[in-house]
Amino acid sequence: MPNIKSSTKRMELSRRQQERNRAVRSRLRTAIRGVRAATDVEDGEAQFKLATSLLDRAAQRHIFHRKKAARLKSLLARQVAALRAG
Figure 1: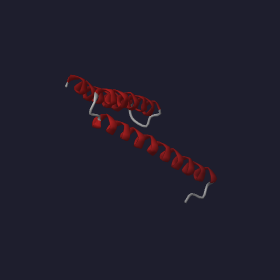
Figure 2: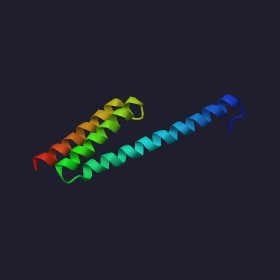
Figure 3: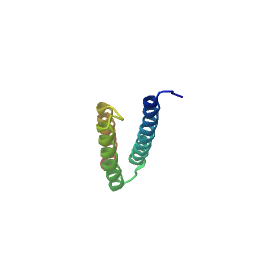
Figure 4: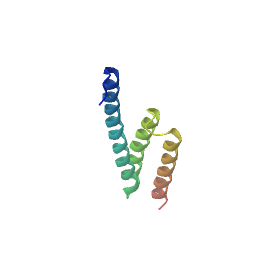
C-alpha cells in the first residue's frame, strides 16, 4: 500500500480503469461469440454490426490496438460473408 497521497490516488484510478476496460473486453468477447454462433444471415449481420461498433470504440479508447481491431473485423466479416454464401 502506498504511503504517498498521490500514489494512493493513482492506484485507485488505475483500479477503476482496469475494471472499466475489463467490462469493455468482456462485452466485446460476447459480441464476437455472437457473430461466430450466428446461424442465419440476419442474425449474423446484426451481431456483426454490434461487434464492429464495439471493436471501433475499444480501439479508439486504446483497449485494443487499432490493427488488432481491424484484423478481428476482417475475420468476422469473412464469417458473415460465408453465412451469405451458403
